[in-house]
Amino acid sequence: ASLRPSAPGVKAWRMIARKKRRIVLLGPPGSGKGTQAVRLAQKLGIPRLSTGDLLRDHAKKGTRLGRRAEPYMARGDLVPDEIVLAMVAQQLDEEAYRDGYLLDGFPRTLPQAEALGHMLSQRGQAIDLVVDLEVGARESLRRQLGRLVCSRCGASYHEFFQPSRELMKCDICGGGLVQREDDRPAAILERLRVHEEQSRPVLDYYAGQGKLRTVSGGGDVEGVFSKIEEVLAKEEG
Ligand code: AP5
Image (cartoon, rainbow, N blue to C red):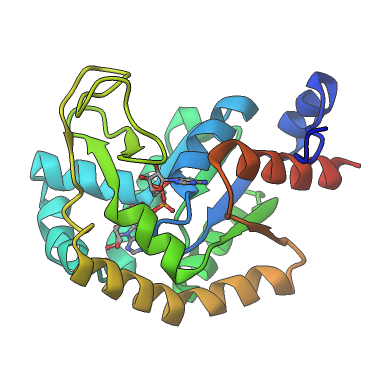
């Protein structure tokens, strides 16, 4: 018999998708936020907004914002709140985000969480649910050290846990796979330290609002997704 938790059926998913329209996915670097967020957003039919991806995109295009953000990211430090908030506000104003979204890796400081709350309340909206993926430092390190990303479309792989079909080639667009600049040991350790320092107040903020759900990020990708599904199904029930 399968040890996996039972996933909600199609009908339950439709109900979840109708209700939970503004979701935040948090967790330490390498916890699998991005991997799970892509699947979840697709399943719920809502856009995913990853501040990490957005910042990398700006940096790649060499925009003013990207040039300002780049040195922080390369070191593994957080990009200053005002830069990230301006970028998110601009994005959420777009039509595609009107009816809901999945925020991946944002907010990650208390000022960001408070500013988001303020921004949404001005629109008569609020965050519905916050899922925090829990993973130990050793596992997070293992995942980041083996991560490969597509240089063209940004899709994420792992050399052992999630290999591409063809060596160093993206399954989706055929682009070349590379290591992320901040996946060097020194930057990884700094990102873990920064997360440790900054995440607790954010989690406390959402726990205080009764919106925080913690999910173990251990196990394989499908197993973690099932656990997230279970949490969403419980919210419904
Ligand atoms: P960001 O891109 O958000 O990086 P992060 O938080 O450090 O998270 P990661 O992308 O490293 O990991 P993830 O949890 O998404 O894991 P993934 O799914 O890729 O941010 C980068 C930088 O941008 C920050 O350091 C900061 O400078 C800046 N920034 C971003 N947002 C900001 C904000 N709000 N404020 C200020 N600055 C901000 O998985 C990792 C690997 O593991 C992959 O190879 C994957 O294939 C593999 N994997 C995933 N799940 C599993 C599994 N279950 N089992 C085995 N392997 C798995």
